[in-house]
Length: 471
Image (cartoon, rainbow, N blue to C red; front, side, top):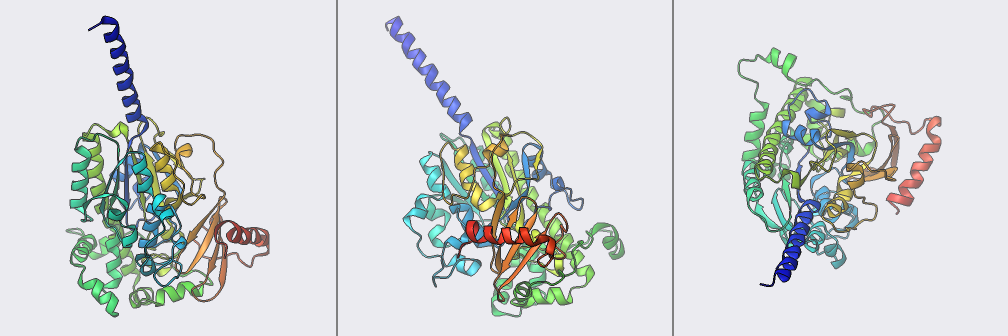
């Protein structure tokens, strides 16, 4: 071969390989781990001393944790619709033409528009030449199922088998970057403690009948440690009752109606003893440790694959759990325990380690899509109010949102950067509240009628109607 020709071919090969190496660095593998029913404070890295979450802590220690992250809707299916579409659940209507705000309606979303299909998270990532993998809990309408949207669905299991199958894929060789969603079920099994106490409706009885694995896992989480007496258990092992254990003063009728719609929720509020509520909290913490162990399996696989420095890891939850606050369990309310969720991101060498952002408002459902697309090297826009978190994660200055909206089946809210929270309830007629998380972080009272809050209340009413939830 002509030496000069050989030289030029070598140069082309060198730069071609360099470009591929560059692409590998700038377009990482992306693993989104999300759990079910985890509140923002349910991690030891968040200062919770009643549990140990080394896997979650590892992500926080090696990345950034946001303390002011919120779901778009604090119940399973609507929140999951948001994760895949980047839109509020209320953007969609169910098979009766009603705005989607709760599980039943979300599961009944009929065929969606081509515009939606073209702007889902997997649609964008396919354009960016990513492999797509989904495993675990789905709880989505057929029109927006992972299979419909183009994922390889690698496991329908929601527990240990899911983590093991995810680990296999992570350790395998890949000829292009991949995006993986791992949807783990716990600590959702806590739902069954109150349910089995009074599953009197046909719906609840059927749920309980199918819950063999869930009840076994819950019983294990509720078990008093070997050799510990009941007195010692409640003295030293059980978390205390929360500071907002009692119902909120002037509690909205919408909250009361939500509780009374399900007999088991009403029974828990009216009849659970202090010790039962504390035992509920104990089991919730143990179930969180159960899911943390599954997360560790996934993190170990990423390390062992040699790709940790080429993998963006995101962690969050679909919603939280009331965990005895206001004498409630389950979710669906706009209280912080239900709506405020963990959100963390880690990519070694790209996201500063050990940072905590306690200022900026983050929406898991709105911001996940543009954030992942940004890291995948493609612009992704669904709801234009969604924002890429990349500038925040990488320590860049950015003009961030000053307010954030959240929907629910009992009403909607807007929270601002100063911790003022305007809630407009509609389940039991029109009701509104203004809360101040700086003055009253546990939401024991409201400030709606306080003259000092008249101006911010009016401002948030306008923002609610003009920027987030125009009727």
